[in-house]
Length: 192
Image (cartoon, rainbow, N blue to C red):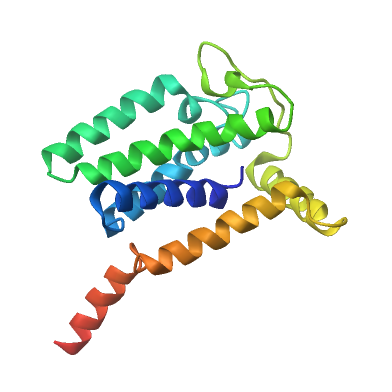
């Protein structure tokens, strides 16, 4: 999944959960926490693998369930102590959904369940990255653009497009949490 797809899935899940459980939209801190958590596994593993060769693939420490579960618990404990447990729940949910999002699409495509991606260091995924971080990223972007322009949109593209549009509408309905607040704080300073 692309990073923005992870954020979309995280936001949809956390927002719907907040509406159902608490009858409110996500707070600004919850929105920021879920956005950060949604992309954290890639921010940790991709540069370390693609540029520095620390991991044999883009699935290492950040994608490991052995790291993600303790991290989510730690964040939940700290945020609960600060009386912001919703932030911890948003973080843990979004982080877990990133891992799920990296294995389920292959299963749905009939390629099996690549659980090795989330079992580092017990199991490692081997890949070679000869082009460094920038070259590998540009290669993936070029492949994605080629897929998009090579014919009618695929079913998976249409699903992602629908989820992204739904997320955008829900985020607007929720009052743009995470963006509205800094804008409001700025306007208050200008007025004062």
